[in-house]
Amino acid sequence: MSNVSYYTKEGLQKLKDRLHALRTTGRIEIAQQIAEAREKGDLRENAEYDAAKDAQGMLELNIAKLEGLVANARLIDESKIDTSKVTILSTVTIKNVALNKTFQYMLVSEEEADLKQGKISVQSPIGKTLLGHEKGDTVEIKVPAGVTKFEILDISHSM
Image (cartoon, rainbow, N blue to C red; front, top):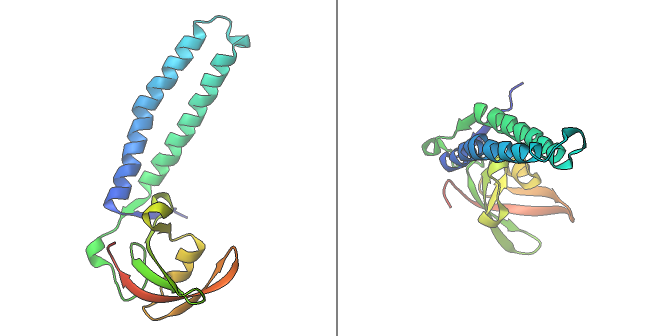
């Protein structure tokens, strides 16, 4: 089973940039911390050395995770997005039926999600529920406060 994730061009570039920074700057900084700790004497009782080695392990774990994400990343061709139904990269305008309040979200991969920018994950409860629905559909989304009805007012592929 592969863990393919779909990204915008911008999102994939951010992922690659973060990986590059960890591989270069991150590894250099950890190596310096280890070298400084070694200079302080006996490694068996050197808490700074142990902490630096732990940090190195965490860094390598993060690098491995990002390498896996990049290896399984697929770029989405925004020109081929079907706006007749909600898909990844759709920008969806929905209305909370009970509150008569509208919201606009872009559905993105989990790694690109940023609520402040109006980007929610297709893996989120709202994202999962909206996928595949069309303009005019009313969907029930389970949120922490219970089940809420939303009407899909519009679907586009840009915010």
